[in-house]
Length: 346
Image (cartoon, rainbow, N blue to C red; front, side, top):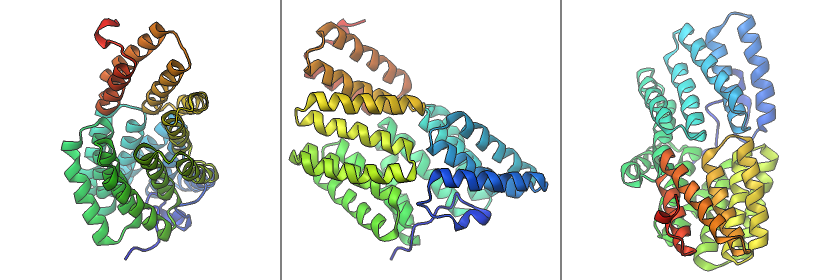
């Protein structure tokens, strides 16, 4: 049985904040408490409130502010001798590194966070850090390495009745099944995630689950209108909660659904919107995926073949350098789709 979803990254007096609180409100409350703690010379409290500030900045796409905030939180935690708070700060920093496409740094910070979480006796930050490592590997396309870890974390979350973490793990496993072509299994897992998130009032997790369901309905069934309806519902949640990254991925998925339906002009508009949003929040993976969708849409709309070839070749090189294997395979499929020889374009 799952209880109501909660946000363990909102600590101290901020535990009264809901997992669904607007990030603008979280940032305002966290900044106020952080200043009070710093003024009073209480580094332990400053570390905890600084974590909420860092996470609000990160989710709002304010990368530089997020980077400063998690590092300040870590320094305050170290000054206070609070090992668990140090782990939470490193988790935030590792999550930000993954968002920015700095995968080696993400692995290092999240690994340290998991170690410190275990040493500090905080099972939640340990679990979140291991989940971060699993998600980093999944995003890079290394399913064999992290599939088992996803399953382990799902089992632990179910045992503790942690709805939010259960939803995260279900969505990650579902995404791997979707990407390897097992659409029925992916749909069932996304559906379970949506149900649990709905009952636990985890609106962020519910929005991501709806995005996954829309994707499968589009690619498996060709159910374009139903997929767009689910994405519109998820988009409303993203806007209400100021979820910048989730909103951009939602728009990118709208582009995917429209492209599959042959509605290439509409798809181009969605990809252009998503591309601008990803660039605004410095998220290179989303930017690359939007560029790919935009290049395919423009090709269908009559773009010069040589321009398409050059764009896809540049994307391939970018993704090769960044270590995003699954996305690199998507570019290769696009090159085959348009009859372009990747080796011929330098």
